[in-house]
Image (cartoon, rainbow, N blue to C red):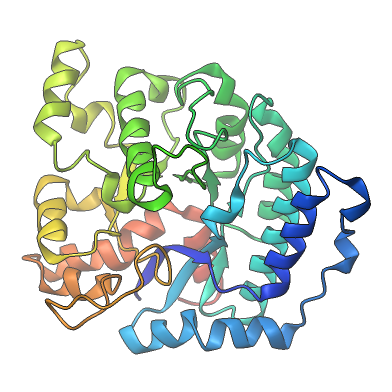
Length: 341
């Protein structure tokens, strides 16, 4: 089974964005604010948006199941207050749940949290619990910078985040560390802010001792881990200077990297530097990079090709495509086993 752990609903029907635009307008003029009931998206519209986009590409490229979450750049936690985010997160998570019900063999949910700058992360727990208990979601996306590029929140190692971690441990779910839209002109959202955040999250975790408090906590750092694998020697050296254990002991029981690296040399480096047990297949397709690479004639985000072409044993390739995902996402594994898979 080919399990893609990083998918977002980037192709949702236009009514969703139109409703969000009205919600944002309503922050300045309450008379413009829409009711949740005014968003009407039919199952047929959901089917069309998936069948002609994500599912078509999954079939074309040979992947089986995608862990599916709301569009990352749409989370925009910096807009409005907690109530704004709570309403928006609930809508977006419900749509992903509906997709997973319409296509149960191909999609399973991961939750967006209703984070908001300066707000206690504990306020996100109700939505997290609903998504796990009622929707059967298998993971969450955690934004380490709800401010949208200004980094006003404490580091991920701070007790500020512990309410979320306690629930992650209780429900045995991992978190993908994933920022949203940058509202800082210095940082392009997908080209700078995302990669900066991946690298920043890794360094925060290196500096701290979070996993002494939460030894079973699991994080996925997306987009190939940002700069971390490319500069692995730097981070091993920094850990050594900080009197931390070797990275394999300090972090690699709890931190994993996906394969959203859009060229063969990048995947070759990732799989050479990072233990194969810490690499999980992902494409984030129909995401940040949607074009065809003129050097290969294939889509940049067709990452399955890169794994197949990498110098890996069949056993290691199986770990990346399926085995590691089942281990890091226990609720996914349980859901598959319940279906005899």
